[in-house]
Image (cartoon, rainbow, N blue to C red; front, side, top):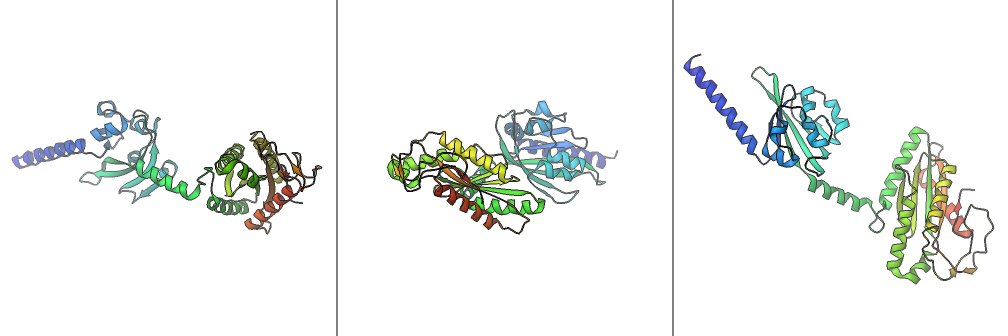
Length: 344
């Protein structure tokens, strides 16, 4: 080796050592994998973020466990494997600039050793040798947890009812439209319940607005407790709630409605001492009830429910489904309250 070559090699080694020390002390969390997926660098910021020290992880392929609790491919692993198709299943948001350039992605990470859940933005950058061969991948991380939580809070303000925590009217309208489209495509039934608190104005007059608010919150909880994972319950307006039941027949919707009616009655919230209305027994439409203009002592708060179902493909509209459920609710009210009614 000539003196020039030796000088060049020494300079290159010095540059690599300097770059390594600089990356090790940067405030940005960074780790590096060699071409076989082994961790060759784990900087101090990465130690602070994950709670895992460099000496524990360098020389291993266990870096995925530092972020997810079980071994899972990181963005750097995906780049090494040239398997960007895995991005869809592993990351909610991601950008693949090109097969050989940077990858960007965001996801929630469990951070088991640090004992905290964080939302991280990851950037994976390839490192090539002079012949264009991939020799390593550098992954840098940014903690976006505060920004993500603020975003979630804003989204909840836009879609959640401030009093009950249920979906609001805007969210109901958007979800009904989406479920109608899905039901049309899959030719499945879509059911809707309209739930109204009986004699709520009289209750509010007697117990005050704070008492009325507490009543609505308890009823919201009772209705929500009967929902499946893909159902939606929303505060439709005032003392009225709406329940979207995807892929549910009218018979199934009636069963859910009866469970809701019974659950609210079992809350045993004292009703107004006396108000206009029928004493009306609980149960299905068509049972004998007292006349609607008779006064009665309302022992507990109750709800009336209108149920409707449509096959979205049968020349109906989502607005018509709401109108049918509303009409059924009106009949339940007219027949004495504390009952469910279905389309006639």
